[in-house]
Image (cartoon, rainbow, N blue to C red):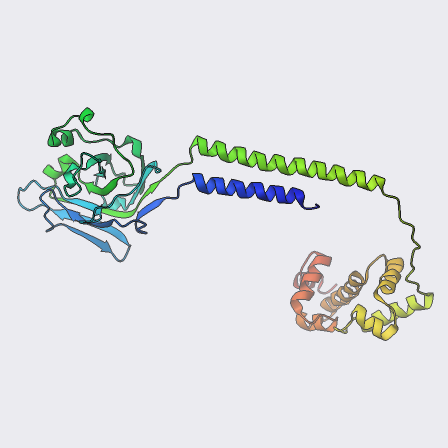
Length: 367
């Protein structure tokens, strides 16, 4: 089978692609392209909804969250991504980083928390019983994108105190059971600042290509390459042996056959009709009775050219003369020497002369 090496290589590459698709986890975006059922909103520790706002800035498509503290009330305003009163969870076990992109000019330091439902411990209706994993984000005025490993997120100590439980007394976290995500101000901001704002451009979970994935891809690629080379090697060896075993067939060379008069007649005919856009091997056959093999053999013996190269050479030679000696438009010259389209003329001219007709005219005008 002539295409056996190609078939083996193609199959191996398909295996490589399937392996990559199986091992690679695409990012899970929550904003602005929401690929989950979580929706954004606002919340406070007292379940108050006003006067805190989460608004979509229609001019920039940023999710702009802000709050103003009233009086001396100690509140905990939050930007939250959740499923409202529905009990739903998201599997984040295959993701390695939380990637947050903000507008640094309109964003203050914040704490990002991932809340996990713990089977056998958490109450679906009481989000306070869902275990938080938090990370403090300090905003740099020159940086928009922040990416933190999920494994670096940690549960705040106050949550264990609030739940009156020790770290050892809670079941192991199930990373397939994330219920919501919250953006909060730092603890000191809650006490010292009357306002707080976040301007969110993007929020998503991303995975990395681990060494195990890279190794699997490398092994599959190496297998594909080796399979192709080995198959190609054996295929080449088989073809070589077959050629050495064959006997040369007996045949009698068939001459296209032409006379000296045919050669003279052909050259004269082309010289008089090269400007005819209908000039072709079929046109010559109908007018002179010479087939394509005879025409090419005559031109090869006389000028070491095939028909196409010969006719183009004659046409471009005449075109060069007209470019030097006349002020005709290039499109008119192209038509005069036998080209129906000026772009075809320009392409062939450039191929032969390594410059455009216009460049040639400027270079040789007046010579």
